[in-house]
Image: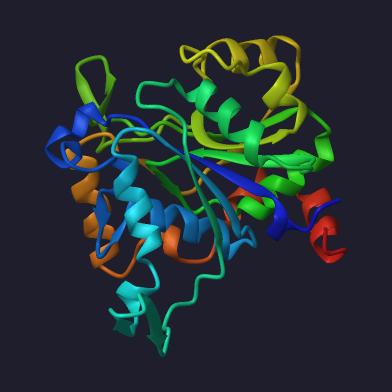
Length: 288
């Protein structure tokens, strides 16, 4: 079994972000800033805090923006000296904590999510038995190491994070015509949606995904995986947000600027109540 820091994390970074066009006209959606960093950086930090260090960024639209960001990552955070005659660069006092391995994999301008993963995995999955997959626009306080251990313990091809969908509107509960409760933007506790943080066995990439550019992860691959009873749900009752609109971006920025961003702190303990806590505790003690 590979150590967790060698598990590849594929991040889908190639979409157009049409619903937040004011931000994505000149940059891909994962590069929209939350505070002083792009949301992609926040997602990678979430994985990194749980031990994942190997990232494959599946790029497309405005791929050059992501390439330039990581090519200049060290120099933009350090003093440096450039020898123009010899074309050499010397960095002085590098000040950053990220010990990541980042592969930027161009997967086409209009390629759909499933095909992006197929093309990137074909080159960069290596001999890994399992891999993580996520989107470039979602944040959570989920403990990803625990989700990975849950994935291993159930021996299914895939595991998806399930979250309770937040309502965009307030809910009014009635007794005939009398209002008995008013809830502002409640969560639907009995419903689960795709939270966008996946783990898959390696055979998923070759057996369920396709090279054709119209292969959409959320259609044939996941539908067929569910039909074959090879997809498990890891339930998460804590924080989760997806940056789909300008309002979503503003709310995430408010959380970050307040110093109380849930994704930047310790994981939520509420998952332990709904995801086989006995196994998770035992696995944690044994260092799995």
